[in-house]
Image 1 (cartoon, rainbow, N blue to C red):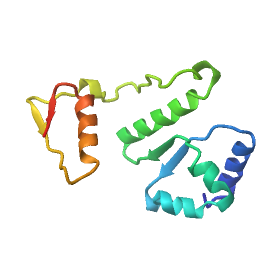
Image 2 (cartoon, rainbow, N blue to C red):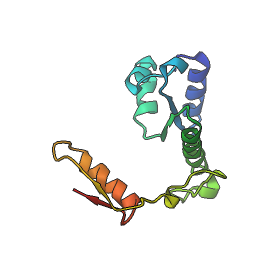
Image 3 (cartoon, one colour):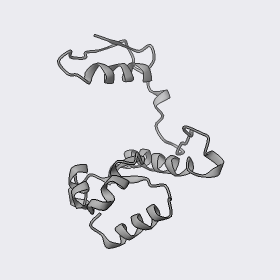
Length: 139
């Protein structure tokens, strides 16, 4: 948000009530940073409209397979704002040749340990177990 052109585009989109998709460059070598740093660079009058309005946010990754995930999230967020897909909650987008989670499997039963001392561990463990139905037990 240090770029004059970027700020001009954001202001124009907000004035025209266009939807935004926030793409977070996390790599400091590429001009990125933490969300707190990026927010501090943003003019105060735009901070709420950008960071508190519930816009979809995507972390931009530099590894190709993760870039594909980022691109799919960006494409889905944009398509869901078009009239054709306005009533949809999600779209089944795929990239030819991508590794699909539904084709992954463990060769033997897996036990996932979730520490009771880590407040978010059980929720994450439940989400992982749900994504790989029947293959993981949680302790």
